[in-house]
Length: 423
Image (cartoon, rainbow, N blue to C red):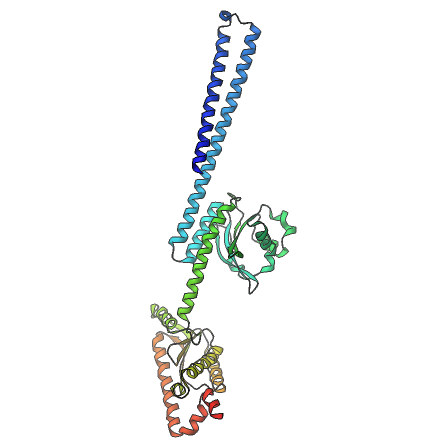
């Protein structure tokens, strides 16, 4: 392809040189005739005719050279634009590839794109088909332009239904004047854009497996606003990084979740403690801790097998997470911890009583160590105190069981054992 372009340019240059040479010869001959009209005995009218032709040729030659200069200027502009486009594209790809933090990389990328288009905002929306919403995942706003990302977290997908149809029909699209497109836009979309002072808009779809999963938007582009190929090229790399992010989040989710109960696991628990440890000396306000240990798990495993034991653990986890959905950790085989900051004592104690009630109703026998502090300087001390209380509760449970072994065991047997004996 490049060789063909070079051959064409070479041929064009040769023809230009030949034409210029012929024109110069003609003009020179006519000028000579005018100067030596007496010697050559040329009639004055003929001389004037030759002079007129020479003048026309000179003017034509001058115009032709102006045209050539204009072509050179245009080519220079095209080359400069192409160089800017290429360097910006390389900058974008480098940013996405080199930065390990996906969120930071994409935010920097949007800044680069925003500068390329000299626009107000550049952003990424992702479509959630299951919930039928679109949400503003990333946004960069130029200096002096308001950020809208917090206001556009959950937008009904129906608002951009016309955009999705445009993506399916045309691919990328450009709205040069929003007011002229008012009748074609959803009224809510139009009002939303006008509220953000958007007058023109460039949008390119994000596509995965031939499905539109979002789009890149550029508000009020003042330069390169027809450069759809540039954004189309960028969207490929953005999709790659979004997929990488999704994989990282999945791996992180798996690394922080217990496979049996789906609660936070010990890794997550240790990570939380480490974060608190880094701020040692800083007061933690209104924090509640519940340290829990299942009773009779070994008996269930020995008599009914580990599958029944796992079922018992899952049932216990269900009762705990029903009351404390976001603050529960499984830190061992039959050990659970609730770590709940920023909660009032009365509310915390109510939750604990509700947990104890639910566990009793579902025949899950748990020993508890409950502590709440208005001010806590050292979280590990608080956990140690809760752990000690839990062991005291467990000791009391087994002490009572020993004195009335048959009756106490029958009353506190896990559901799976009680059902078996009933049979």
